[in-house]
Length: 494
Image 1 (cartoon, helix red, strand yellow):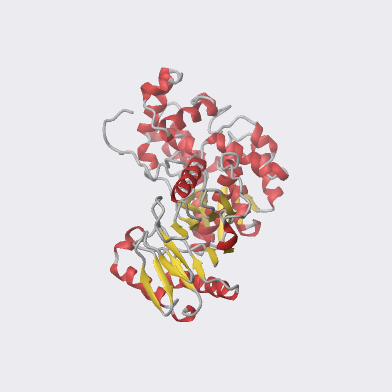
Image 2 (spheres, rainbow, N blue to C red; image 1 turned 60 degrees about the vertical axis):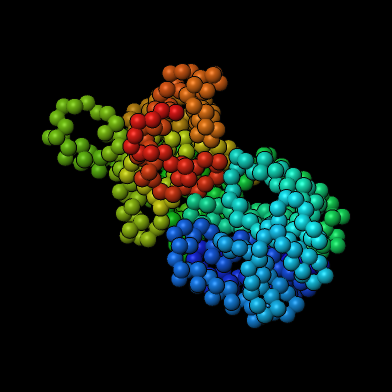
C-alpha cells in the first residue's frame, strides 16, 4: 500500500487557505499513486486557535472548508487529518469522524489512527496525528519515549507532525515512519514543509535512521527561530522589519536570524549611540550592517538625553545620577525605534534574552519594546552558541562582538558583570531553578552560593511585572515564561 505524508505549514483561522494546501497535496498524492494521504493534527484550523475554538461559527467554518475536499478526491484516495476533537477520514464521497484505536479498512489493509501503545487486533499499521511543539531541552527524551511506545504497540507507525510558527509556538515537523521495533525508517524535514510517498511493503525492511537531537540542539534552535520570524511576518503580511543594532551580542544574533529569515532588502537597523557608547561598539555594529548588506542609519541620542536631563533638572535638583538616567537612554532608543515603525511601517524586533528577562536586566518601555521577542526564551550562553553556529561557514557576526565583555553601555565603563555573576554561572542557576524547578534550598545543596541564590531568586520574583508586559517570545525551552507565568502580586518564595 502506498501512503503519502504531507507535512504542511497551516495558518491559524485560515480554514479555506489551509484546505487549498491540503487539496494540492491530495492531488500530488493521487498523481503518485497513493491510496491514503496522511496529514497532521489541526490541519484545517491551524494551531493554536485559543478562544477561536470556543466560537461555534469558527467550527462550522472549518467543517464547511473540509467539505470542499470531498468531491475532488472521492475516487482512489482517502485523506486522514486531525482536528481539535477527533481525526477525520475523507474519501469515497463522504467525510466522517474517526474513533481512535478502531481499525479502519483502507484498501486491503487496516490502519489505526491515534492508537494506544497496546497493539490493536486486526491492525497492520498505526498512524499518529501530531501537533508537537518544539522544545530544544527535551527533544531527545521525548523521541526516545515515543519510540518505546511504538515498540510496545508492535505496529509500523506513521507520525505526521505539524510544522510552522504560530506566535510563540513553533512546530518542528520532523514527521517520520517507524518500524514495529520503534526504529526510525523515514524522516521528513525539520522546520519546513515536506512530502513523502511510502510503501508499507518495504517500510519494515528499510534502513534505520539514527537521530541525535542533543547534538543538534543549537542548530535546531537556530532553525526554529528563523522559521518563527519568517512565519510571524509572513502570516501577518508584514513586509519590513527593524531593530536597534548596538554592537552587542543580542542584537547581532537577532539581526543574523532576521537576515536569514527574510533577506537584507526588507531590513533596516538603527545605531543609536550615546556619550557612553564605545567606539568599538559603533564600529562593530557598522561592520555587521555592511557584512549583511542591510540599510542602516545613525541617530545619536546624546542631544535627546541632555534635553530630558535639562527638562527634569528642576524636579530632580541635585540628586545624583542612578538607574534613572540609564533608563532614560534605553527609553529614548525605544521611542526612536517605535517612531520608525509608525512612520515607515517596519515591525520592530525585541532583542532581550531569557537570562536578562529573568532578572529584570532591561528597561520597561525601552529594551522591552517590539512586536515579538526572538531571543526571549534563549539563555545568554545559548545566544553566544547561536552566534558561533551562525559563523560556522563565515564571519557574519564580527568576532569582536562575540569576544568582548557584554555591556549595556549606559554609564562609563559599565559591564554586565558589575551587577550580575558570569553568565555561565547565572544561566546554570536559572536553568536549575526555572527549567528543573529547583527551590532555593536545593540550589544551595547543588553548590551555588547561598547569597547568590537568594539575590537571583529575589530578582526573578521582583521582575514578574516586567515580564508580564513584554512581547511574546518564541518558545524553545521546557518552561517559557509566557507559558508558565508567575503571579505578579503576592508573597511567595521558591
